[in-house]
Structures are given as C-alpha cells and as structure tokens.
Length: 431
Image (cartoon, rainbow, N blue to C red; front, side):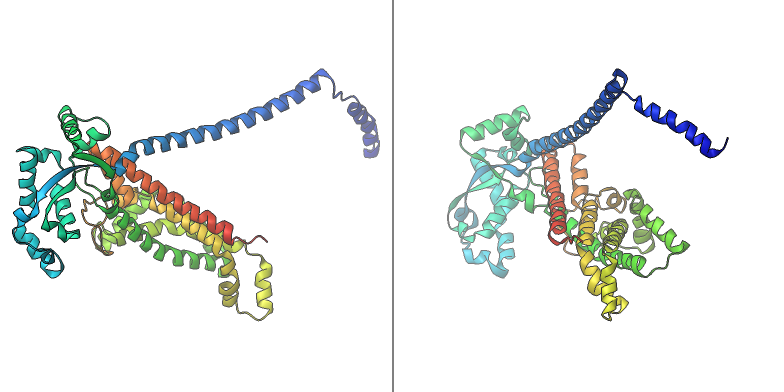
C-alpha cells in the first residue's frame, strides 16, 4: 500500500474520532473541572505564599519596633548643683575659648558632681545615676557657661536598672528607687539624643550608634569609589570591545560565579591580601571598603552589562553615521542612556554591602571603639557589626539598644532601595 493510500485510510478514522468528542459528557466535564480545580489550587498557594511572607515581615517589624522604640527613650533624674558655692569665683568667660580646658581641670567637675549627689540623695545616691552622668553635667556646663552664676537643676541620665524599671521591669531595688524618684517628681523620660550622637560603651544607658554609623558611611564611600568605576569600565569593555572567545567566556562565567560567592569568602580574601600581605591597619574603614568593593564589583559589572546591552543598536549606528568615534559612541550616547540601570544596580549592590557582617568580622572590624573615626585608617566599626556585638551582651539593657539599632539600619536600607526605585522610574527610557 502506498503512503497516500495509507493516509487516506487513516483520515476518515481521525475525523470520525474528532466528531465523537463529547464535550458535554461526564468524562470531559470531569477533566475540565479538574483543570479549574488545579488552577484554583495554584492561585490559593500563590496567595498563601504572599500572605505568609507578609506575616513574617509584619512579625519582624512588630517585634523590632516594639523592642526598639524604647531604645529611643531615656530616663533622666534631676540633680541640683550650687555652682557658685562649688566653683568659687569662676566667671562664664573662663568657660569659653582657650581657657576652657584649664578652667574645667581646676574646678574638678567630677568632685562637684559627687558632692551634689551625696547632698541631695545621700551617701548611696550615685546608684540613681549612670556612671557617666558627670560627663553630661560637664557638657551642659560647657554648652551654657552662664550656669555657673547660680544654683541650677540638671537633668542627668539614670542608671541602666532604673531606666529599665521606668520602661518595663527591673530588679526590686531599682523599681523601688524609681518609685521613690517618681513620687518626688525628680525623674522624667525624654528622647534619647545620645543614642543618635554617641558611640559604643559599657553602660547600655549611654551607648549610641553614631560611631558605627560614621564607620559605615566611610566604608561605603571607599566601596563606592573603588567598585563603581572599575565595575562600569569592565562592563563597557566586555560588552563593547571584547571579542567573543574562550577567554572572554571564562571571564564572564567567573564574574557571574563571583556574584554568588558567600560573603565570608571575600572576608578571608581581604584578611589574606590587605592585612597579611600588604600589612594595612586592622579594623580600619579603608580595609573594610576594599573588602566590600571586591564583593560588590561583580554585581555592578552584571548590572552595567545588562543596562548597556539594553541600549538599542540603532543608537550606536546613528552615532557612527554622523561621524562619532567608537569611544564617543560609548561615552556620549550609550553610557548616558544606560546610567539609570547602572545606578539602580549599584545602589542595590551597595545596600547589600551595607548590611554585610561576616566579611568585616574576618578583617577585625569588631573592635571596641568609643570615639567615631576621623579618617580612613582610624579604628572603626560598622553598624551591622555593632548590632552583632550588642546582641551578645549579657546586660538586658542592650536588648532594646540592639533593636533600636536594627531599626536605624532597616531605615537606611529601605531609603537606599527607595532611591533606586525612584531613579529607575525617573530616568528609565522605554524604547
């Protein structure tokens, strides 16, 4: 039988089978109902995934805000000091200018504070105040020298136990002391500016995040200055000039793999190269920035290549048509159009670097630094590492400080992501 005869023999049978399909039959209706049920199950699972993710995020924010909000509030007690009697004939002019340091040393603010506490609260009155309360007295006196002219009531930070008694629960002795101060009207709660302007310390009532936040900012500046130009130039070369061969394929695969390497590996690399080989200063912002730049660079290269690739070839052809050189085509036409995508990828990469902790722990940026860094080589820490260190403290007063620092870090990260979204929507070109 020929092939044509075979096809003609099968065609009537196929047509007959098609005509026999009963869409209203029970079997077909069950199949249709099964398909609709599968689609409903898929939608339900997708909705359940969204709801579950939202619940986890809401739980995280609820716990962090519930615990961290107390970190932005501090408890203060009043201390009345008769400064004319304590300092003698000191004038306000002596507390200004170059004479300030010598005058402060002569009047001995710590002795004045101890005498005032003993006179107002008795021999054990120092238990009401933080160990660094006398420095708050000194700072207020420095800011307003006219206070030496009269008897003044200063609001000074209380001890960590009394601060916790005012906010939640504490020891029985601290709660009794807080009740005594509250009954006498000698205690108040106010916004904790020291948390935003202070640095690390041993007393949870007096610690702040400015030192670690400044370290993070300096580290991010070093990271951006190194990773952005090198990453963009590498992307331009690979996308516009490099010939396609095995070497460039190997480089592309390596860059894609580097973007997925665990961050602690980059920490080990920074430890071996920058600290051990180049003997750079340990726990410094420049070493942290170099390490994070190595980690962020592959992300910038990938984002920049995608942004450059998205520019239509007609832009290049039109520029070449009016006589532009290849470099002019890239830097005058392609890069300006690709900048929004490059900036979006760069900001997302920087946001990831800002939240990294593991590589910075490897290069020793977990130092106890009580003063903010003033330069690239000064001892410094960063905000994620500061949170890690506080979370490991035994004192319960650090719990709320840890949550408050996490809130600040989340606000920082959300702000960077919001900027990335704004830049993408504001400058994105739709072809």
